[in-house]
Image (cartoon, rainbow, N blue to C red; front, side, top):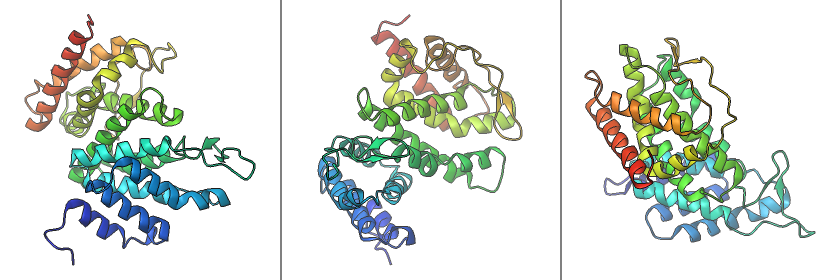
Length: 310
């Protein structure tokens, strides 16, 4: 039985060590390393080096599947994510993994994950994909949108923790991190802002949906707003195409209200700020969500002023 005096990270680790998924020696050692990182017994660089050394022989032997390592990290994000310092340490650790020397084969060539040509360790192969499946869990969110039997409070917390980590990791990645991860976490930021702000908030259902997505979107702005503004200024990830009519949001689908250019751009930034301001004035929305919207709109205005944006 877990002691009531155990920390959140100790409680997570004790449960994780019993999980059937993580019974190989490598995952057992990984969970203990993550626990020590969270408790600040070791720093992110040491944690990254320790994890990599545990899997080095598997990578060299061709058994380079790191899925269970990444799932353990994602599980910790979900369960200890209410502690911002924990998420910051995890983000720094994953970035440190990508800075480790390449794993070389017998001929001195970097070993790649063949299906995606991702190099160990610089490209942290499959981490972003695992994160999208485990820490964000889009199927879970789709069920929530459709009103299926999921715990709304748990879904909100999981989404918030995953996106706070995402914003912190994006800051670690920008501008020279692993290419796929850098692209994916920019896309995650844009998607969360889209889901929170580019749908109407007229009906009861639309407001309830906004209450799920606005806090994570606000955290992207509060943590990485300056970076996101720079992406908008540079038209990053934009093809120049106009967004067509789309309907998202479960069975009671709503049309997207932003029909400007795709990707990041200043028009979209201004639209997002206006929507945060509008949501902060909704009478029927949850008070905590209203506060997130107020803080995000204020941060966006300050970013614009600081970076001399009109």
